[in-house]
Length: 96
Image (cartoon, rainbow, N blue to C red; front, side, top):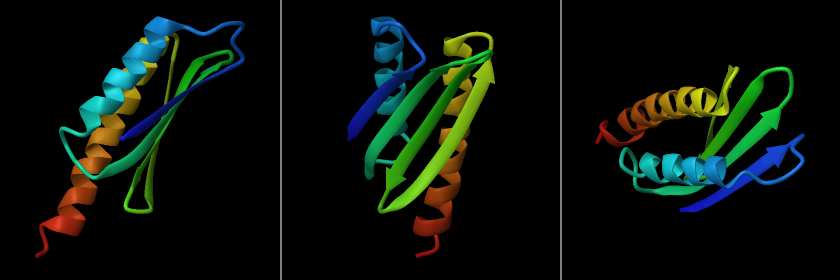
């Protein structure tokens, strides 16, 4: 799985956030193995926003998390994507 981490409105890179994002993305494969790529974007505005886009078989799952801390936002996004992965997997693979 290819993972892209992007920082918007930052002065420099944040290795701790980047490692946390890559670890979170690798955790998604525990729920579904055929993930093509994951894009995680950190946006530093009034609130700390994390946007995640996961691509599975040309289908896109998106989630956004907002809070006062990037780690909280990343956790929110992770929970949302995991729920979407479970639902997608149930919908497409358990019908057979």
